[in-house]
Image (cartoon, rainbow, N blue to C red; front, side, top):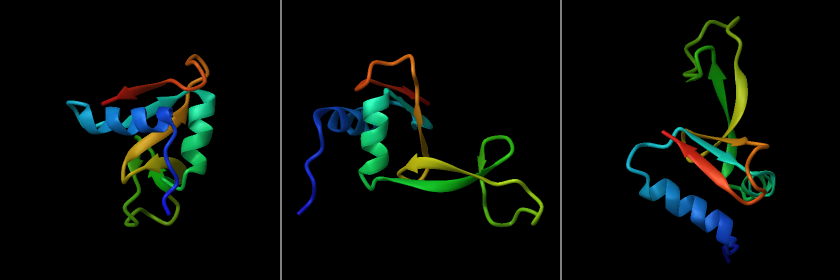
Length: 91
């Protein structure tokens, strides 16, 4: 049985789906950020310089940093200026 989303998570998911441009970053207040990270919907993806997703074809010496994303490409990040359950989407 799937876990029911909180109202904040449901609002975030709806806003991402309804956004007129592809969302690249979801900035979240602390409580929502924790909920997203613990939901099973977030996973680490490797990024390289320039904020680009790693392809696996980089040189072995290329610095790769794992960043949490939801879906395939939406970076999920904590924003301390937002209220705990609020979010801001960036295309």
